[in-house]
Length: 359
Ligand SMILES: [Fe+2]
Ligand SMILES: [Fe+2]
Image (cartoon, rainbow, N blue to C red; front, top):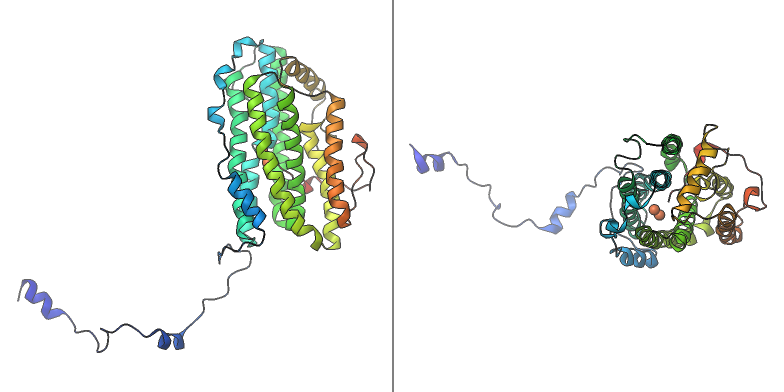
């Protein structure tokens, strides 16, 4: 036999009753559950909302309302600056990028953690939006450096001694950024969520303060607009962290309170690298770094970047810390001493592996 008739001859008839739909009630008798889910696995994934305010943050930030690509970059004319001014301006963005360009990687890790620890759905979504914002902030650094020093930060030959100092200083900052990342990678799974969030909050408070100042003081139009937009994003991140902390802080255990005290001091040490001056405690810097940095900051300030004076920076940093103190002390968290900016408190040990904050 060949063709259709042949094929039909080889077919086995269906078992009796198989033309009827199975009865769900009968199927239930044979029901079997899958094995238990492994600890710290992202599954099972569900979508609970415990804090509707977080969902509001996510909805409000869904459209950030700006893009680094559509800022008025065409108004930034590199030839309007001297070589040294260009190096100094690009230098500041290279320093900023140690904080803002680590943001995407740092928050992406944290976002994975929120899945593994089965945080409520809006927390996971908020972290996603922070990752997206940080990519935009990184792009600001990238675009500013590319416009002022094509090939920068490291792939060009500076024409002046100050330019060479700038490149060496930036490389040392990246060296310290690498040390931060090594500590962060270990710390992210070691610290419970309230501690991570307090550290994140410090970074967001610091960054929203920084961009707010610089928006007010810079005279370079594209940076004025960039700082305004980045500052808005950072204020949203701060709101997210505050909302999460309102939920977490009342439930702290004693050892968690003690870790937060240490974390605040660690955050001060790390974030002062951009907000004030890098303390000796963490920052590994050569003897030329500080004098070169002063020269470069002075040059960038004269070019209109909007870098505040030491006194103004100290005052702003102090205000941010006093706010944090007001938030944490009602939850019986001892505040660490930060004598550098005139804040009394407990003396705490410093461990470079404790540094968690991010912009
Ligand atoms: Fe941020
Ligand atoms: Fe940022």
